[in-house]
Structure formats: structure tokens, C-alpha cells
Length: 467
Image (cartoon, rainbow, N blue to C red; front, side, top):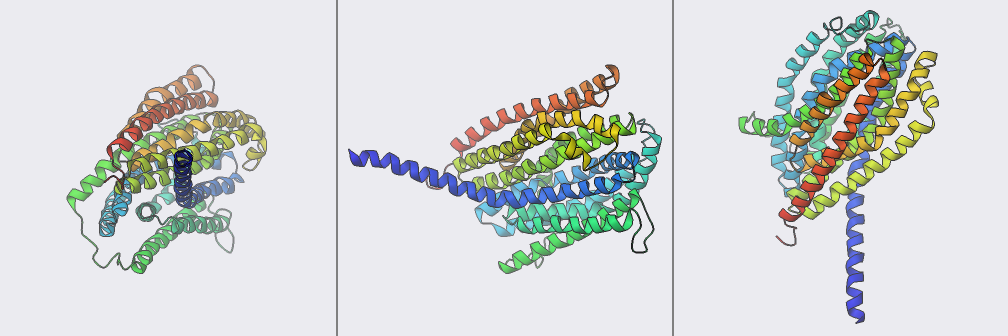
């Protein structure tokens, strides 16, 4: 009798140890990636803060110019997200040469997409007057955009090297590159915006040039890190560098295009809201940009956890362990949502001290407090949809996040926000209400999809012991 009672206790103990071991492995991957995402966001935050001394027009110009740039640039980065699935699953199988081949194809895609992205960005920069953007904001945004456009190739090369390193379980160089790039960007902003050390004051163009320099640095660091890591393992990364392979490029695009479209839908929705806000007073646009920047900082944590979820789920599936893939997704979900609950509390309880970091303009502060309340409301839902997207990507599902973002933002949220802003005269608050309701709907759809797919994968993919 005692032995029968001991067996379940021993089983439960082993089960808990397994969860703890896998959770530690997830955190070991997630923490450097989260720090990397915060480092990425830190560059935008530094730009916003350092041009803040030039006034609301400069803040609005950086906001609008960044939207126009990041819409096509993030689409290019999104195309490379297929590496999360392909590299992580190949690494899980122990096929390291396959990992190299996928990186090579990603580099070719990055090089091919760069001129397309730059042309789209250049053309979009001439549409500010058509969109009704405030004339003073449009002038500064155009100047900012023309300089920032030159950072596209290093940005996409950085993205390819980053997805590769994360896919093989080496996120630490990514963290180092992004955190150290913030110091490069900070120094560049200090020198170039107001003119220091003998340089001419360039205003918002100085901020853009500083970002370009920082991105060249990031790409160089990560490509060197990938080469050094593979050389130490005895797998020379560039010795047998493959040429373009049409079948692999197509496969990468099949996974990457839906992921890229999903990013474009999401980022483009908030960017479109920024363009709509640019039709309002500069104070409303500045408050919108500051609140969006704050929400984007908190978003970086579940975004990093999402990338870790994609890699962990991909490794488990590549190793043939479906139940472990499901556990990894749920652990990532709990981690991301738990953090966003804390972020929501901060936004709701101390909005004014947060806003004063960016601006002391009374009009900006008055409008910014309610916007941070909106941000606090949607934090948990933002965490759900972000981590769900990463976990689904790890198993190769990229279409549903794309469709959810398209219908949620572009069919429902943005039209509602526009109607509330300009039709019902609710101003910038109407825009944010529409976006908040859209985000809640998207989160619920993707959560349901993850529940269904994770249950299926746990049953269909046999465990290592059973195979």
C-alpha cells in the first residue's frame, strides 16, 4: 500500500521538476531577448526624449516620420520571421548545416527587399499634405525621413542575424548589440541634434543620422557574433556559403509573408492612428506619441517572451516532443501576461510622473493622462495576443495572426476610432478607444487558436520517449 502511495508522489515530484527545468530554460532564452527588445525600444525612446527639447512639433515629426519608415521596414523584418520556425526546428533536430542555409537565404531576401523598402519610404514621404498632416510637422518629418531611410540595409541584415542567433539558442550577443547600440545612439543624438563638439546642429535630422550609425554598428556586431559562434563549434559559417536557392526562398516567404503582414497590420494600425492624430493640434499628437511610446516599452517584454516562445516551441517540435511544445507556450503566456498586469498597474497609478519624463507642456500633460489610462486597460490583452503569436509561429502557424490583425484593426478598430475621433468629435481619445477594443478582440481570437493548436500538437507529435 505504501509503495502505491509513493508512486504518485514520485510522479508528481518528477512532473514538478520537469516544469521547473523547462521554465528555467525558457527564462534563460527569454530574458536576453526581452532585454534586446527593450534595447530596441530604448533607441526610439531616446530619440523621442532628446528631440523633446525642440518642442511638440519635433516630437510629432519623429512620430509621423517613424511611422512612414517603419511600415515598410518592419514588413521586411517580418519576412525574416520565418527563420524562427525554420532555424529553431532544424536546430532541434541537430541539423546545423541546415541552419546555415536558412541564414544565407535570409540575407539574400534582406538585400533584395532593401531597394523596394527605400523606394516605398521615399514615395510615402511626399504624401504628408495629402494625409492632412500639420504643415510644420510635415516639413520636419520629411527631413527626418530622408536621412533615416539610409539605415534600411543594415537594419534588415541585423534582423536576419538576430533571428538566426535566437533560433540556435544564442540570444546574448543580440542583447549586447542592442544595449550597447543605445549608447552609440545616445552619443550621436547629443552631438548631432543641438550641435556639440564642433558639429552643426541638425535638429530632427541629427536624430535620424544617429540612428543610422547605430544600426550599422548593430548589424556588424551580430554578423561577427554569428561567425565567431559557429567557428568555435567547428561549423564555419561563411566557408561554404550557399548561393540563392529558389525553393528555400519560396519556403521562407511562405512562412514570412503572413508574419510580415501581421506586423504590418498591427504597427500600421497604430501608425495610421498617428497620422490621424497629426490632423489634430500638435499637443494632441505629442500626447499620442508619448503614450504610444510608453505602451510600446511595456510591449517589448511580451514581445521578447513571444520570440522565446517561438524558439522553445520550435525546438520541441523539431525534437518530436509535442507535450513539451505545449508546455513551453503556456509558460511563456503566463510570463508575458503576468508582466503586463504589472505594467497596467503602473500606467493607471502614476501617469503624471511618467509623462513628465517626456514633456512639461501643460497641454501635452492634460491629454496624456487619459491616454495612459487606455494603455493600462489593454496591457493584459496585448500580452495575450503577442505571446500567442510567437507560440503559434514556433509551430509554423502564421496565417491566423495576420487575419486576426487585419480584421481586428483595419475592418473594426481603425474605422471605429476614426468615426469617434472626427465624427463624434472625441478627438485623440476616440482613436484610442477604437484601437483598444480591436486589441481585445484580437487577443481573444488568438488565445482560442493557441488553445486548439497546442492541444492538437500535443496529441499528434509523439514524445521522444514514445518515438
